[in-house]
Structures are given as structure tokens and as C-alpha cells.
Image (tube, rainbow over all chains, first blue to last red; front, side):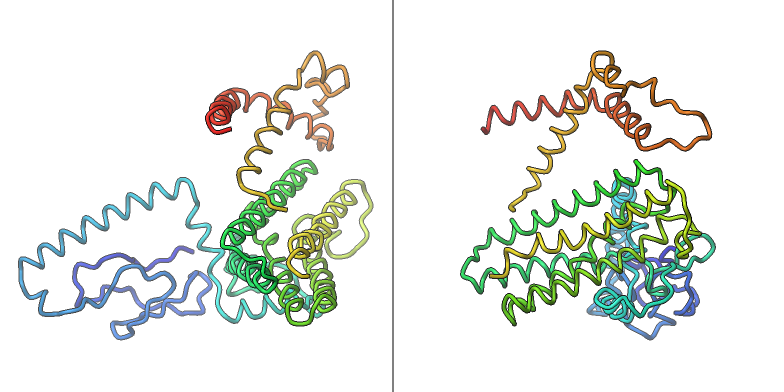
Length: 300
Length: 82
């Protein structure tokens, strides 16, 4: 599922060495390949190097050709080395999966976060053992919404504090680190409890970060409602968003944590499943608590 | 509540220190949390208590040496910067 197109500087800017343009609906590709043939100037996904060199006249000179070739080979070598070293610490390729989203997915997911009651099938579809990229499956977790939600939450918090004349630039930093610390604490607690209950699940840490980050959407909606409609608006909207996030988290985590039979709704007795159900409910109940905790001081 | 990342690091260090100072013989065995009590039957899924004891024992084994380094750094920083 790797992004197969090469990126970086090209040696022959006039000839595009490209593979055949693949079908954009091919689930094997994370990102759409929108530059096909040699005609479309759009870059897909993460286009890295500049393609159209300004000033064709510069290239006719053989010396500058040589210099450009040397420079580009140096640059690609350095980039290779940096990529290799960076990949050891942060799994970049795994992160790419979480950002393979498109507008339709984001729209649907946001709708699902505030109104999860009509959705039927919560299972993540797989494609030969690997989960399908988020753009093809609305149930797959992504990191785009949490990251954007976090940043928007910081900005909205600044806005809210500004309307009460409590703003100063340091407040933004304090809010950001505070929310980040609570996120880290929550993810660590969930990891610890998953370890203690010995759940055999394919939830990775990044998945947990994604699920914990979905509550920022509800928080933002609540705070904005509070800004527009005062405290009652804030409480009502927050209540609605809390219940939605609760239902959303339960329905998503249930499939991941509980065993197959219990997740389908059939009553399965046994201490193990009961414990896992309690764990799911605890995780889901923590979300509204955090949502309230992180926003109540913003709305007066 | 204004939490900073530094507070988180401090909390983590304090927690890990707290787990590392639990003495095997003098304390854990006395309250029935010793290492030998956590070995359940093989094939039997370990319960929460066994997992917790495993966690405590592994934290103590793994984090002893790094904690020495981290604590020294912390002490020096606190001495220098208050």
C-alpha cells in the first residue's frame, strides 16, 4: 500500500518517467495518482519536488545541466539518508495510512461523530489482512480529524478567551500543552488497562490516539455554541455531543475489544467478556468527562 | 487546569520511582504480591492481578538503570534551576 510514485528532484525535467496511471479507485493505493501521462500538472498526495522548472533557457547550457544533475543527486542522497533515519523513530509509512483521507470521508465522519445513531455497519473492512485506507471505509480510524480538531480547539479556545478579555499569547501555549498532556494521559491509561485485561486486539497506539482525538470535534461544537448562544447553548450542545461521542466510542470499541460473539450483541456470559464490556464502557465514559473538563472554563 | 509537558514528565518519573522502590522480599511478598505468586498455570489466561504483578516486576527490572540516570539528571537540573 505504499505510495509508489517517486518524488524528489528529477534529472530530466522534460521527460516524465511515469508508470502507467493506475485506477484511482484501486484500494491498493493510499493516495490518488492524479498526475497521469505527461499532461496534468497536478501533484497528488504528497508531491515533493518541483516539476516545472522555471526558465527553460537555463537548461540548454551544458554546464548548468551538469550542476543541476549533481545538485539533484546530492539532494536525493541526503533525502534518502534522512528518510531512513527518521523512519527508525517515527513510523512514517504507518502514519501515511492515517492521513489517506478525502473530503467525502471527512464529511461523513464528522456527521457520524455528532449523529451516530443511524449508522448500521461499524466494522472496518479489510483487504488481504491489512485494513483498508480511511478514504474507502468510513469506519477506519484516521489522524486527520483529530489533528485538525486539536488545532481548531486551540484556536477556538483562544477566541473564547479573547471574548472574555482573558486572552494573552501564552494562554494558547498553555491550552495546547494542557490538552496534549490530557490526551497522553488518556492514551496511556487506556493502553495500561488494555494490557491488564489481556485483550487480544489489533488496536495500535496510533488508533487509540485517533479515537481519543475524535472528541475534539464535539468540544469545538460545544464551545462555538457557547459563544453564540451563551451558557444554555453550551450545555445543551455539549450534552448532545457527549452522548454522541459516548455512543460512537462504544460502538467502535465494542468491535475491537470484545470477542466476536459479544460484539454482535448476543449475550455471552463469562467474567472475561464482562470485564471487557466494563472496559469499553469506562473508555467511552471518560470521553464526556474530558470534554467537559477541557471546555467548561472557556465559556462563562 | 494548566498542565505542562514538564509536569507530565515529572509525574512519570515519580510514578516510575515509586514502582521501582517496592522491595521484593520485604514488602511485596508480605502482602502476597511477590513474583512467585504470579505464576499461574500455563494455558490459563492470567488475571488482572497476575498481569499487574508482572508489570511491576518488569518495570523494576527494566527501569532500574535508566532511572538512575534520569534521577541524576533531574537532581542536577533542580539544583541548578530550582
